[in-house]
Length: 448
Image (cartoon, rainbow, N blue to C red; front, side, top):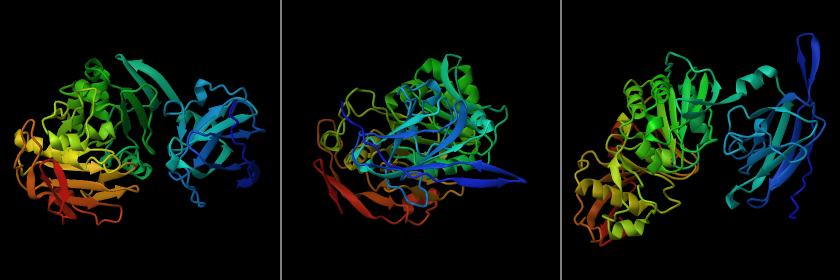
């Protein structure tokens, strides 16, 4: 059996004075280092009071303390016999991520709690810290989630949804892969006091927003569920929407011309609710979407060599987001070298008269990065990567079935947005200065 790393830890005690009574709140601190992907570090916490609520904070690169932790973690809670009761399971396929709002609030069942901390990727290695502090019963109630089924829709719910929409602000949140905590928290501030709707096609996925009255995860993976009365009702009353990653073909088939999509569009037209998506959830937001209706995908090189490959299924999207009129979106952009694929999308859109040259453009976002169009109509970028705006300057020269794409000259204007970039006004983003241009000659991409 493979031995798991054993770590040493430091223990500190913090005393708090409340009114005239002295109450001691013991906060235990633990430190560890992840040295390889999928190699867990095990922390055993002893001396806890059984059947007592505790709050656990995991500090890593996405939820840093003053020590600026560097790891990327996911945490599994276990009883001493290494079993994982339902109440210990996290919001992401049973595990907890460090950036979940409020940390992990749980009733610990035994005097010993075991934490298994690991990272999925080699880039996630590094230093982390953990704190555990007694919590109040009120905090436990506030964090409790219910598993429900309403109108055939599997639902995970925290809080109590209201019957009147609450709208503080409006924004668009475009996450290139994983949800970026700073952007998620900004969405929470826009939806404060209202109801948050997270939509996925995978059971067990739940994302919360700080400051909202309620958060619900809805599984809307079929047309029947997307047309169900409860899906329509929650969309009409939501203060924020976020669509999960996964498979955009499931979303497209289920949501196109559905009651859920129609209600989302009504909320957007009133600027009642912010909207966002990560990975496949971003891919489905555009005016035109790559619906991925075949099991196979294709590379940028294949798209440039034949922009009419049957695998390129471009369709009118289910949503009418005013800020994304004329846009097609791309995800995991720089990491998967999708520059040529986005250009081939734009060529097809123009050649097939899906959009006019004046309207069509592309939005692409790198992994772990989020492009936000904020409540003032300005751009913000969060995360380590960039967001990219691709603006066609002319019609393609050759865009025919079975022939390589040719698009000569300064064919595609490219605008790169980073966290250090100035805040551009989104309404005129296509007029922002170019960082460079692309042309395509017989299926070969050239930077100019």
